[in-house]
Structure formats: C-alpha cells, structure tokens
Image (cartoon, rainbow, N blue to C red; front, side, top):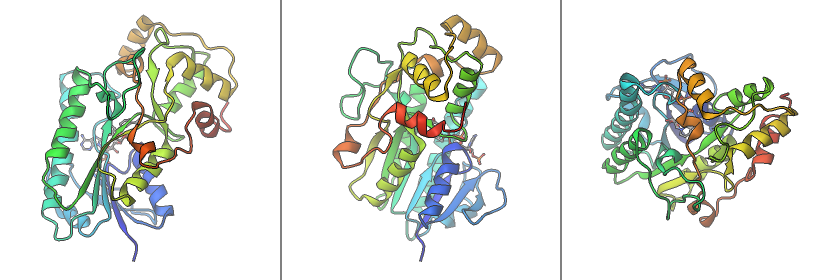
Length: 308
Ligand SMILES: NC(=O)c1ccc[n+]([C@@H]2O[C@H](COP(=O)([O-])OP(=O)(O)OC[C@H]3O[C@@H](n4cnc5c(N)ncnc54)[C@H](OP(=O)(O)O)[C@@H]3O)[C@@H](O)[C@H]2O)c1
C-alpha cells in the first residue's frame, strides 16, 4: 500500500514541486486547499479553510507525514490588513493541523511546518546564522516567524515528530523569486540591488524536496532545520552569477531609493531584497544530508538552462 503524504498549501510554488516529487516517489499525495481544483493522478484535492476542523481532518489518519506550507504570500505591502493576514494565515493553519492531529486514532508519523530563514537578524560581516549560534532578529517579519514556530512547537502532538524548516529563498523554475529576477536581468536591470553587500541565502527547490523526504524518513530528524545551501553570497555576486548563467552582460544597479519607489508601485516591500540573510545549516550536513546543489553557479546553470 502506498504511504500517504498530506500537503496543506500544496497548490503554491513549493507545494506543486513537492506534489510532483512525492508522486514520482510513489507516495499517495493529498493537497489541502481553500480552492480545490480537479484531482489528478498526482494528488487528490481536498477542501479546508485553513482555520477550522472539517472533513479534511480524516485525511490525516495513518499518514506518513503532513507538510504545512500555508500562509499568505509576504510579497505585498506591509500595511495593517496584510500584516494581519500574513500572521493569522500561518498561525490559524498551524493550529488547525495541531488540533486535527490530536483527534486522530492513527496520527501522522511526522509533521513538517514551513518556517523562514528570515527569523535571523540582518547579518553581513559576522559568521552565518546556523541552528546553533544563529541570532534571531526583530521586527514584523521576524515576529511572524517566531509566533508561527511557537504555535507549532507548543501544539501537543506526542506521537508525531515535528520539524520546522527555516527555509531560505527557494529557487525553482515555475515560480518563487527566480523568475522576476531573471526578468530584471533580461531588461538589463539585473545589477546589484541596494549596495549589493546584503547576503542572499538560497536553496535549490530540488534540495528542499529532498530535505522534506529525508526528514520524513529519518526518525532522528526533529526540531529546527535551516534549509539553505552552504554558501550564501552577497547580492552583487548573486546578480552577477545570474547574469553570467543567462548570458546577459549589462546589469544596471538599482540603488535603495529606486527600489523604494519601485516597490511602492508593484505593491511589495524592499525588505525582501535588502535584508541581509546569511544563513546556513549545521544540523543537515552533521546528520548526513548531502546537498545536490551546494553552489549558486551550479544551481543557476541548472535552473536557467534554456533561458536567455
Ligand atoms: N518560496 C520561498 O522562497 C519561501 C522561503 C521561505 C519560506 N517560505 C514559506 O513556505 C511556504 C510556502 O511557500 P510558497 O512559495 O509555496 O508560497 P505560495 O506559493 O504563496 O503558497 C502558499 C499557499 O498558502 C495558501 N494560502 C495563501 N493565503 C492563505 C490564507 N490566507 N490562509 C490559508 N492559506 C493560505 C495558498 O493555498 P490555497 O490558496 O490553495 O489554499 C497557497 O497556495 C510559505 O508559508 C512561505 O512563507 C517560502
């Protein structure tokens, strides 16, 4: 019999990739979504509202794992209403899953909850933040991630192993941060952003898929893991590597004030580009996880093949 993996928020960027990955690995995949589309061979679509118990809770019975990716995108203006939804969508969905697990006769063996590498402080010259020495930051985004993890780790699910993945910027082909960055590069705007010294921690989507599978199958995996490749780079290096991978010579820099204006018009926040996220994992390599895409060059060459 196939083993079952339930993915809440499984129709988003990371979710779609995980669905395809676990389907190929012969798992039965269930997606919990507020807007079910037609079920496919890859995954059954099940309605939930991301807040309350409902028929969906039955799907957790006997599951190998539940992976929760739900949360309003942070790619928006941080005004009061958006801030509330960014926070509540993460807390409510995590709470709902915690309660559903307590009602299961055969609870899922493991529960992976999304978290974010943005929980660490803005770091440039100091060593990268790992799970052991990493220093947490302050401010709205950090507060959201702290609250999200608090709800997750405080939920009482003694028979279910819990893993929070503090994920860095995830690079993949069909969505996420890479496509808009590539478009800037095509328009000759792929120069450094701000002063270019802020670090970018990143992970290839395939390594993130592999980390999820590794956590599910590794009984020792529990607690917090940073999901970031081992070599974070300054923004200027990131953009230069992207230009090289896609064959673009000119990359006009975007100073912070230009980003401020641009962000206002496209309804996003410059924090997403200007915060220095220097994050690595100590635990993953120590526990035997091997990155397939440890370097940015290899990652971008793989993901942008055929892009120009
Ligand atoms: N992508 C990255 O680089 C990255 C980095 C670090 C952390 N993360 C975290 O990883 C998770 C998945 O990321 P992603 O890039 O796949 O995000 P995404 O594409 O925006 O997908 C998130 C999913 O959350 C659900 N959702 C949205 N608003 C919601 C709300 N108000 N209430 C309940 N559910 C809601 C949506 O599912 P339905 O509409 O189908 O219900 C959506 O498909 C997110 O929590 C994100 O913060 C992502």
